Amino acid sequence: MIYILVGLQTINIMLRFLLELFGLAIYGYAGYKLGATPMMKIGLSIGLPFSVAVIWGLFGSPQAAVQVPASLHAVLEGIIFLTPAVLLLFIGKGVLGWGYGLLVVVNRIFISVWEQ
Image (cartoon, rainbow, N blue to C red):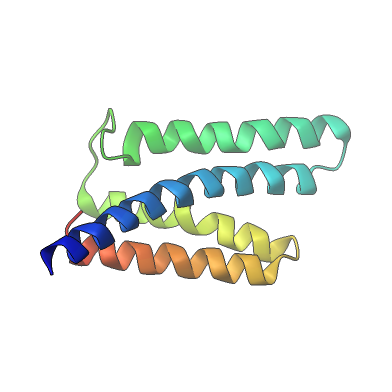
């Protein structure tokens, strides 16, 4: 039984990593779709995911350079991980947006329950 739990916890951590990668890809895709000119499309498709990755790396990741209070971390995590779902909804990818958002919420619940 313990092996199954350890396996599920490992899968949950892998899912978290994939959600981070997909989230960055969604930021880039949305930046491209929302840009009005070719230069804006390029700038947003590179700048949005880069900015989010820097913010998450500095303040939100488990090995963050700056440790923030738990309440601020929860807000930051919610903004960074749920904004891609909203962006997908905004650009007309509703099913993907709802699916991504649901996975983020379920993943976060398991992270809390298993204290990962």
